[in-house]
Amino acid sequence: MQARKQNGCRGAVSVYLVLMLAVMIPLTLTMIEAARISTIRLTLECAMDLAEDSVLAEYNRELFRQYDLLMIDTAYEHERGSVGYLAEHLEGYADYTIHPSKRILQPGARDLTGLSADTIEITKVSRATDEDGAVFRYMAVSYMLEKYGIAYVQDIQDLAHTTEAEGIYDSDIDSDLSDAQGNVDAIHVEPPEDECDEDGNPVDWEEPEKDDPAGGVLALRSRGILSLVCKEEISGQTIRPEQYASHRSLVVGDGMCEDWEERNSLAEQFLFSEYIMEKCGCYTTPKENSHLRYEVEYIVAGKDSDTENLRSVAHRLLLLRGGANTVHFMRDTQLKNQAKGMAKFLSFVLAFPEFEELFEILIDAAWIYAESVYDVRLLFDGEKIPLIKEHSDWNLGLENALSLTASELDHPNGKESQKGLSYADYLRLMLYVTPLSDRTARCMDIVEMDIRKIEGYENFRLDDCVAAATVQYIFYSSYGYSFFAERRFRYM
Image (cartoon, rainbow, N blue to C red; front, side, top):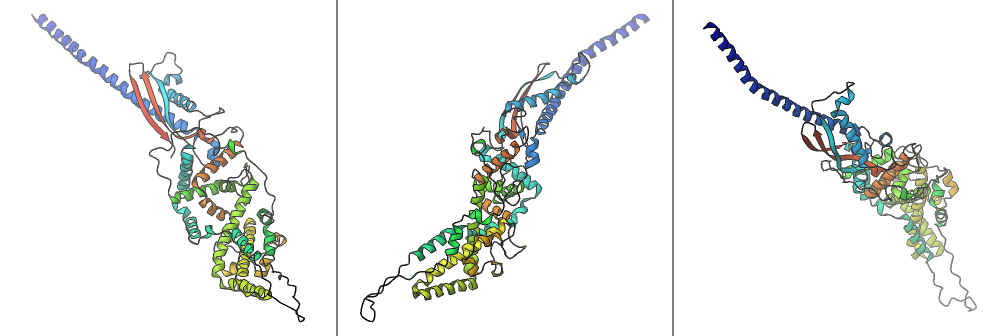
């Protein structure tokens, strides 16, 4: 009887264990599968993060070194870029993460996930040249905001507003001088009626000669602006515009990212101009190893050669200084009275006081023109000139101005001053009135020119450079699962 009881107890335990195993085995397998799925999800998150961070770390080194711009050059080592190359790199980095067995020197090793990348497709890219260079400009302004902040451009903003308020951009001293000279040249004195000598014979009459107070200035003007203001040898470098971003057909991307902040305020446009001034060379501070010596001048003028760009900027600078000098001249009673006195004297000599006003207008225009040429020469020599002068800042007396010669410009003796604006500051004002689209396109040209000078980057193109991308991933697991994800990665 006792033996039967003991055997019965042992049977009960066995049944209990069988029943518990029936519960525990599915539970254990379920927990293992749940752990597998969690591991797969975590592995995929890590794989995508590491893949995206890795391709972001493949930014073009020369573009960053010279211009502080972070962009992926999708050409890699090929002649032309392709988002397919970018997708291949993403897949390679993702594969390295999801297949740890490739890093284990153990034959037949397996992992818990059994993952493989089925499809990695790039659906959207923000190319540097998209939206007329808006992506390129966004990256440049972001760099300037990070380095300096928005307050950096307050002074140049105030200066530009002053220039507009004074109407300096509206003046054209070339036209003023031509019109004034034309009016004087058109003066015609009618002969006196029935003038006779003592014997009653008609007197032969000749029209009196008109003194030409602006003759010296007109001779100076005919020489051309560059010959007057440049003492250094002028660069003869040229480009073929069709090779660069502003003129060739571009590969088009998907434009700006939706979550990028707006970068179109006036202050940020000034920041972009400051970016140009910081990264590009100009006549007074040329950039080493650049294709064009006068890069900022190219961005302002857009000509095909250094010579033409410098000529255009010199002429614009002449007009800018002419407008500023006109503003001061009209307020300076001492200068106005000197011009009026000479005009009165000339009209007295001719005995035709009615011509006094025409002479005064011509003398004013010639004096302002000569002073402006002198200013431009000083600026090209590295001196500073105030935007709006005071009386003490005026360089040329009336007689010196009207008789100014090219040889006198070769040895300028202007009033040295540490106040005022430099040549580069006047370029900033010219950039302000250059359309934003032109500034952006020509700046991209300069970037391509400079990068292509470096060995190994001869085929560099900004439309191959990507600042942001949207990627769709499809992964499969050998355990019967599939996973889909869409992610965006970008700089800034």
